[in-house]
Length: 359
Ligand code: AMP
Image 1 (tube, protein in one colour):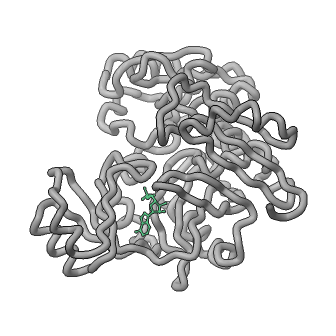
Image 2: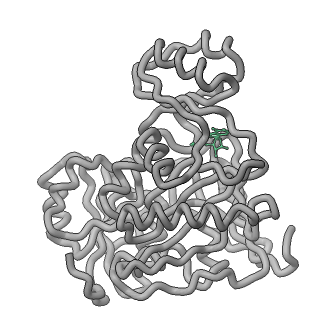
Image 3: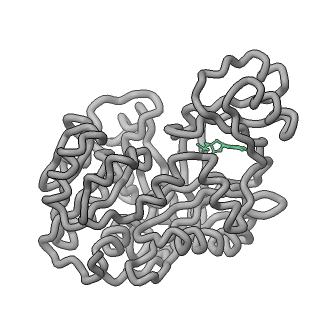
């Protein structure tokens, strides 16, 4: 694996074609790189802003090999890219490493991994069948949340079990599941870091994250006092995760701030929705620093440039408000160019730099 910086004009391959890929490609273009998007969908919002694209299944070994042959480095913006076919990428470096994908794709592996590094997840137990569910309920009790181990996102594939009665009413689908105790938290927050090819780590300020129906709705920086007190411990853990994985690029860990300290929820081996505020609010955005890291460039500063920043997601038909949002000249509007508005679909976001601290 080469560690020399990739010169401008090089091609970055991105696995995944959504808005994260779109914003990565825009940051890459600023640094003089070309992007090649590889995604199953025929048209995608990342491909719209990239130099090249391939539309093929992630499992297509020959298409992946062709794609890799045209790229100088490959990254991913989607953590559910199947791992096994990635061997077809051959010698082209994959950054972040495949191990990060493997672990982040399975909630059970992820929790065990982080626990092994000293982190505290919610109490958890694997659930493979009815007997396993009964055992998990006996061990952990209610309330709790039953989640699919794989492929869940934005609160999908989750069932809240408020009482043993809820458990009785549930028919298990046959998917591998995990049962987690319900965490009583004061707030949710994320730690986003970037690790360079030389091992240097930089952190952005931690955003406090508000969710609605399991989907991120708002990220606010600075986070409140409940969160701020727990950021140092959460950063220490995130740094250990990055080191243990030999990570290169942007890595996100999500936490609950509780009376007993930070409880680890999940990790994303990629840029994250709760870091979109960094585009306008930090000296260097998560997207630019991810590109810098995977291309072996020096990292940019990550400090916040204003007293406070707020990022609101535009979900479903909230994106129809684009014109009224633009009537306020302080709003930074980002629309992802997704044609079809569906309920729960992330269509864009709006960021405000706040000079008065909060609001
Ligand atoms: P996840 O997909 O695991 O990030 O879950 C989506 C959201 O559901 C989280 O951001 C929390 O708001 C909530 N949630 C998930 N797991 C738990 C838990 N164990 N206890 C309480 N709330 C949870």
